[in-house]
Every structure is written in structure tokens, then in C-alpha cells.
Image 1 (cartoon, rainbow, N blue to C red):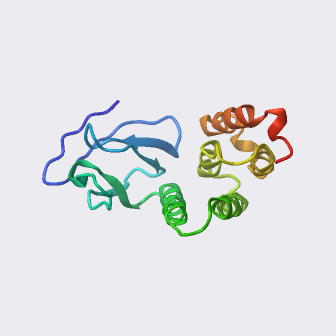
Image 2 (cartoon, rainbow, N blue to C red):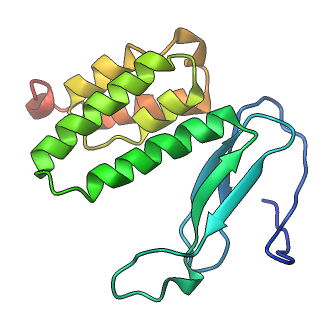
Length: 168
């Protein structure tokens, strides 16, 4: 855990990591959500915002990731999450949202089979059916099978592997 003071709207930290990209998780206050960012270069610039549209909640203490530069992997994750957020808030039915989400995820994984982001996103996709998750997992390059992100995929598949869900 690294703790850094925010001065004039900025904070800095440095450290040594065994291998990049690495997933960094930021929390800017006790009441803020966690922002997950992949860092894959020695200098990455990250902008957060508290300009949130949260109905019925004072959002001045809530922060979310607004932009990232200097990390291609971080940008992949942020762009996917932005599209996912748009989909969640769309007027589509839940069934169509899930279908579109799976299509977006499959497309992303096909475009980035060697990216840790692909395995990370799939490992978080608990709304997929076992069949969808398994098909997507087969698109991920074997070079990621020893990564922390891949262990998330294995947990997902284990959780979804229930006889009543296999054919869905």
C-alpha cells in the first residue's frame, strides 16, 4: 500500500514493480469508489473527477477515473469501462444489454488476446453464462495463463460451472 498526499490537486508516487503492466487500485477518499488502472510505463498521468451524476448523493467526495495517458493498457481498460457504463445506462432491456456486453467483451478479447486487460475483464464478468465465459476464455492467449488476471478467469469459470447453467 502506498499513501500519497494530494497537493494542489496532484499526487505522486514511485516504486519498483516486478513486471509491467501492473494493476494499480486508487481510492482517493474514505467514501470514494476504487479506480482500477493498468500502468505499463514509467510515467503515467491519471486524471480523476468528482463531477459525477449520482442521483440523491452528494458526489463531492466521490471520485472516478476521467482519463489516462502514458499507459496503453490503462487506456484499453478505461475505454472498455466507459462503453460498459454507457451500455448499463442505456434504455435497452437487461437481456439485450447482456448480449451486447458479451459481444463487446468477445470483440475486445479477439483484438487484444495477449493483453492482461482481456483476462481481467473476463474475470470480472460474472453475469455471463458458463458457455459465454468459456468461449471467451479460449480466445485469451496462453501466455497469460500464469498471470494473476488469469486466476480471476479460473475463479469465474469455477463459479459459473454449475450443471443448470452449462447450456445457457
